[in-house]
Image (cartoon, rainbow, N blue to C red):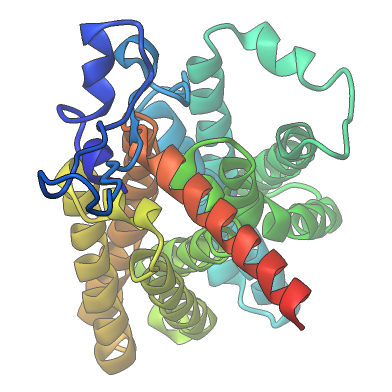
Length: 346
């Protein structure tokens, strides 16, 4: 049934041959004698898109701006949480590193977002109205206060002023840090991009775990060993969540998981898993040594960055072949008809 749409050069490009959008085979007679039964041999309908065009429009988001925004925002959000915990447990050196990471990551993420938007005022226009049903609108209202709090806290930390203000700013940043680390997964899944939308229940876990691995890894690599244990634990837990969630995406039976295995997205995802797995192993076995903390933290941050690029590129690739739209639609239709028939026969 799907033979004509398995590759861009097969079924969907055939629309260039004429205005028809579907073709069926002709009936063929079996046997030549009169009186013999006639068996209809009708080929399955072959899908072709109009004039060989995509069904789903490719997002206008640019690379590397958006993947870097996703990575930096996630690392900043988890670092803010880590900084607040370190402050409460009296680890001043880890607190300082986490606040710098959160502040720097938040400012850079906004820079890349604005660069992708093209004009700074577009970001301000997004703050005019809060729409609870829109992940993009809600995300803007998460990013704006987080960036202000994390950036101000990092600046006050560097200047050494107002210790009570530092703690308050760190607590506000930590409050928004968790939603910032995961809302981007909800944002991507809320689009019509097949390989993002299909995994709407898994992408927030992929991004949340990736954020914990990145923030914990960076802070583990930069903080002194005598205070870096909370960062190591966060990195280990985050890497485990990330690898488990990615496995759920890549080993899904749905055809829309295919782009994560092929071409450039496949290479990025394999490299991401290799870095994250190696970083996780080093963090467990050698994270309490200086060289191990630096090496594992670097690998975990690199794995998180590659994961964001891989997920982004895989989603973009899934918009360019109509089979990732048509086949899941047919499967849902067939399942609905089967469920309806089962209900009637009960």
